[in-house]
Image (cartoon, rainbow, N blue to C red):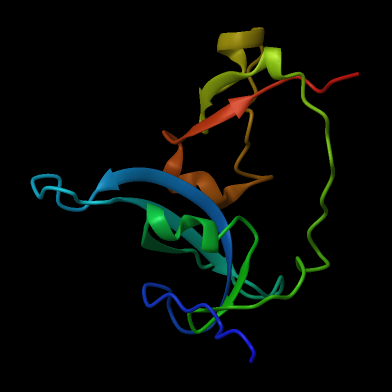
Length: 141
C-alpha cells in the first residue's frame, strides 16, 4: 500500500519551494498548550517564474515535513530532488567557531568589513526575516 502524500493546507495553490524558515511566534500566546509557529517563505519553484514570495505560518510540529528547498504543488509535497538550478555543497564546519547571528547582520561587527553575511542580491528570501537567527561558522580544514 502506497503512502498517502503529505499535504499542508496553509500552503497556497501552485508550485512552490521552501526558501526560508523565519520568525518563530505563538499564534495565541494566552492559550495554554499552544504550539509555536514559524513563518515560512515560499518562492516559485520554477526559476523563470517572477520572484513573487509568499509567507505562510506553519506549526513547529510540522516543520520536519517542510525542510528548506522542498518542493510543493497545491500544498502537497513532492518527493522530487532539488531543482537542477540550485547548487548544493557539503562543507565541514568547525563547530567550536559557531556564533549566533541575525540574518541581516553585516560582518562589520565581527570582522570590521562593510558587507553582509547574506546579501539580498545573492539570497533575497530572508528580506522579511532579517531578525531571524542563523549560525555563522568557519569552514574546517
